Image 1 (cartoon, rainbow, N blue to C red):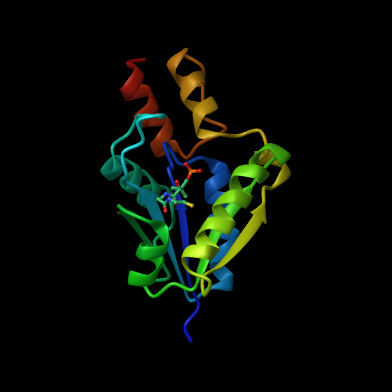
Image 2: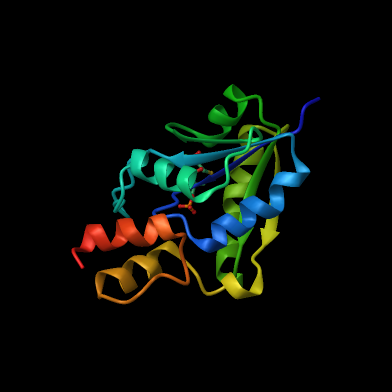
Length: 162
Ligand code: PNS
């Protein structure tokens, strides 16, 4: 069976922490699908459209036949099945991520017991990064150059008019 993994997330926007997880996980799979959540999220409206988020990830990554980037709507387990994926990748930072990730793991397992979820611990240099903090820094005029790929920094500057 082909080893196909989906790495889902909001990626609003993608950070160097996400890119690190992608680079570390790619060698383990025959195909890695980066899946940008396009379901509306009223609790946390997105800054970037799904198309913009997909485009930024594509630009930030070296092109590889093993990597696919697209957006998805609906349940993750349904999307993974449609793509023939047998693994889900997630990154873990601090302990605070754990409860949310554990709940999502249990629920996805209930919905599709055949799907295995694999967790990557963040590399230390990225443990402080989150898309929310990046957006706040950019909004308030701070530099995000050390935290996100250059294409994202440019888009943030455009978005906030600096
Ligand atoms: O980067 P995020 O916001 O932590 O990613 C969360 C994401 C997109 C992985 C999660 O919200 C998700 O899988 N959404 C798709 C809808 C779904 O399947 N919800 C049930 C999850 S148990």
